[in-house]
Amino acid sequence: MKFRHEWKHELNQADYLTLRMRLRAVMQPDPHAVDGKYFIRSLYFDTPSDKALREKLDGVNMREKFRIRYYNGDTSFLSLEKKSKINGLCAKESCRISAAEAELLCAGETGWMLQSGRPLCQELYSKMRGQQLGPKTIVDYTREPFLYPAGNVRVTIDYDIRTGDFRTDFLNPDTLTMPAGQAPILLEVKWDEYLPDIIRDTVTIPGRHASAFSKYAQCRIYG
Image: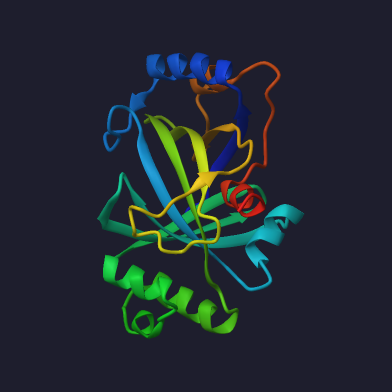
């Protein structure tokens, strides 16, 4: 598991328009994006006592959360993901799951995971059984992604963050979501060992400082 550096900044509309022009001038578009962006739908897991939410809000130094996710409405490619954070560094582990397996997860059926041969599925199984981890809410948003090879830099701009209001039928395209309060436009910058000066200069906006904003926490507060 490789840990990476991560910055988050909350933007207003003027910041967003300025930054998008800068990023397009110096970074490469993500080849998986459609017209420069894609739609993300995730289903986050938490315990009955909201362990993941509380640890985020309390700023716990070592924490993790699980989610399943797909892009642009394509349920033929789903992934189970675990995001870990330690000492301000973040890491993500993932594995493919099928739509049928995702349906079982949403229904609380866990038996298949133990025999799946996928370590991440087996870990989630143990935590669903031991911690009563379960699907909690849908998080929707639109993302504009940019890449820079040196430093393995990935810059994303996320907006139109919406909450599923405790719905867990996230494979259903007709599932309605609603705006997650006054959620900001969110800039995220991730890199490995170093952040090139050209990217540091590009993403620097006067008056904007590092943020601890969480899309999951925002969606839970407003849904």
